Image (tube, rainbow, N blue to C red; front, side, top):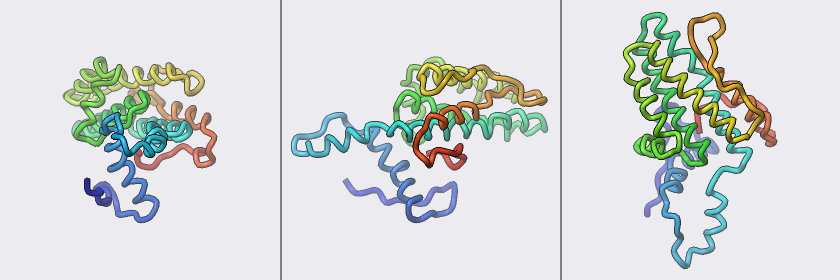
Length: 216
Protein backbone atom coordinates (compact mmCIF):
# COMPACT_ATOMS: atom_id res chain seq x y z
CA UNK A 1 0.00 0.00 0.00
CA UNK A 2 1.60 3.34 -1.02
CA UNK A 3 2.42 5.78 1.70
CA UNK A 4 -0.04 8.74 1.72
CA UNK A 5 1.56 12.04 0.79
CA UNK A 6 0.92 14.71 3.45
CA UNK A 7 -0.79 17.79 2.10
CA UNK A 8 -1.37 21.23 3.59
CA UNK A 9 -4.81 21.76 5.09
CA UNK A 10 -7.32 23.45 2.82
CA UNK A 11 -8.41 25.57 5.77
CA UNK A 12 -5.10 27.30 6.37
CA UNK A 13 -1.50 27.93 5.31
CA UNK A 14 1.09 25.20 4.91
CA UNK A 15 2.89 24.62 8.20
CA UNK A 16 6.14 22.61 8.09
CA UNK A 17 7.85 20.51 10.73
CA UNK A 18 5.97 19.28 13.77
CA UNK A 19 2.67 20.83 12.65
CA UNK A 20 2.85 18.93 9.36
CA UNK A 21 3.64 15.72 11.23
CA UNK A 22 0.66 16.27 13.52
CA UNK A 23 -1.68 16.87 10.59
CA UNK A 24 -0.33 13.86 8.73
CA UNK A 25 -1.12 11.69 11.75
CA UNK A 26 -4.59 13.12 12.41
CA UNK A 27 -5.70 13.29 8.76
CA UNK A 28 -4.03 10.18 7.28
CA UNK A 29 -2.73 7.70 9.85
CA UNK A 30 -5.45 7.89 12.49
CA UNK A 31 -8.38 7.16 10.09
CA UNK A 32 -6.46 4.16 8.73
CA UNK A 33 -6.00 2.84 12.26
CA UNK A 34 -9.71 3.22 12.93
CA UNK A 35 -10.59 1.30 9.75
CA UNK A 36 -7.96 -1.44 10.13
CA UNK A 37 -9.01 -5.04 10.62
CA UNK A 38 -8.70 -6.22 14.21
CA UNK A 39 -6.38 -9.14 13.39
CA UNK A 40 -2.72 -8.94 12.49
CA UNK A 41 -1.37 -11.62 10.10
CA UNK A 42 1.18 -14.11 11.42
CA UNK A 43 4.65 -12.76 10.82
CA UNK A 44 3.76 -9.24 11.90
CA UNK A 45 3.36 -10.16 15.55
CA UNK A 46 6.14 -7.77 16.49
CA UNK A 47 3.70 -4.96 15.68
CA UNK A 48 1.22 -6.09 18.33
CA UNK A 49 2.70 -4.01 21.20
CA UNK A 50 2.86 -0.95 18.96
CA UNK A 51 -0.72 -1.44 17.80
CA UNK A 52 -1.82 -1.83 21.42
CA UNK A 53 -0.19 1.49 22.28
CA UNK A 54 -2.07 3.13 19.43
CA UNK A 55 -5.45 1.67 20.38
CA UNK A 56 -6.34 4.89 22.17
CA UNK A 57 -4.83 8.17 23.31
CA UNK A 58 -2.73 8.32 26.47
CA UNK A 59 -5.04 9.52 29.25
CA UNK A 60 -3.74 13.09 29.47
CA UNK A 61 -3.87 13.44 25.69
CA UNK A 62 -7.47 12.20 25.68
CA UNK A 63 -8.37 14.85 28.27
CA UNK A 64 -6.76 17.53 26.15
CA UNK A 65 -8.52 16.40 22.95
CA UNK A 66 -11.87 16.38 24.74
CA UNK A 67 -11.15 19.83 26.20
CA UNK A 68 -10.31 21.17 22.75
CA UNK A 69 -13.69 20.07 21.43
CA UNK A 70 -15.60 21.50 24.39
CA UNK A 71 -13.74 24.79 23.94
CA UNK A 72 -14.60 24.83 20.24
CA UNK A 73 -18.26 24.55 21.20
CA UNK A 74 -17.87 27.33 23.76
CA UNK A 75 -16.32 29.60 21.15
CA UNK A 76 -19.32 29.31 18.79
CA UNK A 77 -22.41 28.29 20.75
CA UNK A 78 -23.74 31.84 21.16
CA UNK A 79 -23.28 32.66 17.47
CA UNK A 80 -26.31 30.63 16.37
CA UNK A 81 -28.51 33.23 18.04
CA UNK A 82 -26.27 36.23 17.50
CA UNK A 83 -26.31 35.68 13.73
CA UNK A 84 -30.05 35.17 13.75
CA UNK A 85 -30.60 38.26 15.86
CA UNK A 86 -29.30 40.46 13.04
CA UNK A 87 -31.23 38.58 10.37
CA UNK A 88 -28.34 36.42 9.17
CA UNK A 89 -30.08 33.06 9.05
CA UNK A 90 -27.50 31.72 6.59
CA UNK A 91 -24.70 32.56 8.99
CA UNK A 92 -26.65 30.96 11.82
CA UNK A 93 -27.06 27.79 9.76
CA UNK A 94 -23.33 27.70 8.97
CA UNK A 95 -22.45 27.99 12.66
CA UNK A 96 -24.97 25.24 13.42
CA UNK A 97 -23.26 22.97 10.90
CA UNK A 98 -19.88 23.67 12.49
CA UNK A 99 -21.23 22.92 15.98
CA UNK A 100 -22.93 19.75 14.74
CA UNK A 101 -19.64 18.42 13.38
CA UNK A 102 -17.87 19.20 16.65
CA UNK A 103 -20.62 17.55 18.70
CA UNK A 104 -20.47 14.41 16.56
CA UNK A 105 -16.70 14.19 16.93
CA UNK A 106 -16.94 14.84 20.66
CA UNK A 107 -19.48 12.05 21.05
CA UNK A 108 -17.17 9.59 19.29
CA UNK A 109 -14.22 10.68 21.42
CA UNK A 110 -16.15 10.23 24.64
CA UNK A 111 -16.96 6.71 23.47
CA UNK A 112 -13.22 6.13 22.89
CA UNK A 113 -13.54 5.99 19.12
CA UNK A 114 -11.32 7.90 16.74
CA UNK A 115 -13.44 10.24 14.59
CA UNK A 116 -13.02 9.25 10.92
CA UNK A 117 -12.68 11.71 8.09
CA UNK A 118 -15.77 13.50 6.79
CA UNK A 119 -17.01 10.76 4.44
CA UNK A 120 -17.61 8.34 7.34
CA UNK A 121 -18.28 10.72 10.21
CA UNK A 122 -22.06 10.37 10.06
CA UNK A 123 -21.91 6.58 9.79
CA UNK A 124 -19.56 6.30 12.77
CA UNK A 125 -21.66 8.70 14.83
CA UNK A 126 -24.91 6.81 14.25
CA UNK A 127 -23.23 3.68 15.65
CA UNK A 128 -22.50 5.24 19.03
CA UNK A 129 -24.87 4.56 21.94
CA UNK A 130 -26.08 8.16 21.69
CA UNK A 131 -26.47 8.09 17.92
CA UNK A 132 -30.04 6.82 17.79
CA UNK A 133 -31.22 9.67 20.00
CA UNK A 134 -29.04 12.47 18.67
CA UNK A 135 -29.11 11.80 14.93
CA UNK A 136 -32.68 13.13 14.44
CA UNK A 137 -31.96 15.97 16.87
CA UNK A 138 -28.91 17.17 14.94
CA UNK A 139 -30.63 16.60 11.58
CA UNK A 140 -33.48 18.81 12.77
CA UNK A 141 -31.01 21.49 13.84
CA UNK A 142 -29.37 21.44 10.41
CA UNK A 143 -32.67 21.71 8.53
CA UNK A 144 -34.40 24.18 10.85
CA UNK A 145 -35.75 27.32 9.13
CA UNK A 146 -34.84 29.77 11.90
CA UNK A 147 -32.30 30.27 14.65
CA UNK A 148 -34.76 29.74 17.49
CA UNK A 149 -35.48 26.21 16.28
CA UNK A 150 -31.80 25.50 15.67
CA UNK A 151 -31.00 26.61 19.19
CA UNK A 152 -33.70 24.38 20.69
CA UNK A 153 -32.31 21.26 19.01
CA UNK A 154 -28.71 22.16 19.80
CA UNK A 155 -29.47 22.62 23.49
CA UNK A 156 -30.82 19.07 23.55
CA UNK A 157 -27.57 17.83 22.04
CA UNK A 158 -25.47 19.92 24.43
CA UNK A 159 -27.22 18.56 27.49
CA UNK A 160 -27.06 14.98 26.24
CA UNK A 161 -23.28 15.11 25.80
CA UNK A 162 -22.85 17.06 29.02
CA UNK A 163 -24.64 14.25 30.83
CA UNK A 164 -22.40 11.71 29.11
CA UNK A 165 -19.36 13.69 30.29
CA UNK A 166 -20.51 13.31 33.88
CA UNK A 167 -21.14 9.60 33.40
CA UNK A 168 -17.51 9.12 32.34
CA UNK A 169 -16.35 10.54 35.69
CA UNK A 170 -13.24 12.05 34.17
CA UNK A 171 -13.80 15.16 36.29
CA UNK A 172 -15.94 16.32 39.15
CA UNK A 173 -19.57 16.71 38.11
CA UNK A 174 -20.30 19.73 35.90
CA UNK A 175 -23.85 21.09 35.75
CA UNK A 176 -25.17 19.75 32.41
CA UNK A 177 -28.01 22.23 31.91
CA UNK A 178 -28.02 25.12 29.48
CA UNK A 179 -28.44 28.70 30.66
CA UNK A 180 -28.86 32.25 29.28
CA UNK A 181 -25.91 33.83 27.53
CA UNK A 182 -25.28 36.70 29.96
CA UNK A 183 -28.20 39.13 29.47
CA UNK A 184 -28.76 38.12 25.85
CA UNK A 185 -31.78 36.04 24.73
CA UNK A 186 -29.74 32.94 23.80
CA UNK A 187 -29.38 29.53 25.44
CA UNK A 188 -25.86 28.16 25.81
CA UNK A 189 -24.15 25.40 27.74
CA UNK A 190 -21.05 27.43 28.66
CA UNK A 191 -19.03 24.54 27.32
CA UNK A 192 -15.80 26.15 28.51
CA UNK A 193 -16.71 24.81 31.97
CA UNK A 194 -16.14 21.28 30.69
CA UNK A 195 -12.86 22.23 29.03
CA UNK A 196 -11.60 23.76 32.25
CA UNK A 197 -12.67 20.74 34.30
CA UNK A 198 -10.87 18.34 31.97
CA UNK A 199 -7.65 20.32 31.89
CA UNK A 200 -7.65 20.57 35.67
CA UNK A 201 -7.26 16.78 35.71
CA UNK A 202 -4.45 16.68 33.15
CA UNK A 203 -0.94 16.37 34.53
CA UNK A 204 1.22 17.05 31.46
CA UNK A 205 2.73 20.57 31.48
CA UNK A 206 1.43 21.37 27.99
CA UNK A 207 -2.13 21.03 29.30
CA UNK A 208 -1.96 24.02 31.60
CA UNK A 209 -3.92 26.29 29.26
CA UNK A 210 -7.24 25.79 27.57
CA UNK A 211 -6.51 24.93 23.92
CA UNK A 212 -8.04 27.20 21.30
CA UNK A 213 -6.28 25.88 18.21
CA UNK A 214 -7.94 23.82 15.50
CA UNK A 215 -9.61 20.61 16.60
CA UNK A 216 -7.31 17.57 16.40
